[in-house]
Length: 119
Image (cartoon, rainbow, N blue to C red; front, side, top):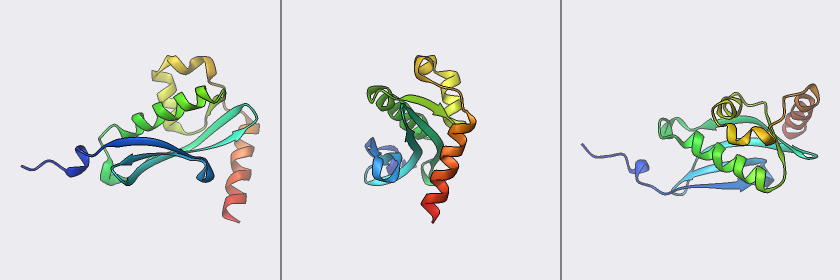
């Protein structure tokens, strides 16, 4: 049985700040992303998804690990509105020192961003 080509392709993560997201690529294909907005000293993560074609390969974890490491390097704090990012943080205590609780202000900022983006 032949193995799926995507399992052998190179995986990379890049920040795409113009799209407010980190992307995980498999070869040249964007396999998934985690969206964020920066508000002051915080980076608010509000949505993560991986394309069904790439499911089960651990790409969400690769993506979020890289995004959180870059967030730390950028001197930002993490606000995990996204359920996947929140779950990841519960399992990985190495980011506890830069994780903030979700506040009504963070929720309003995301709502305003989404409204402005869809206008």
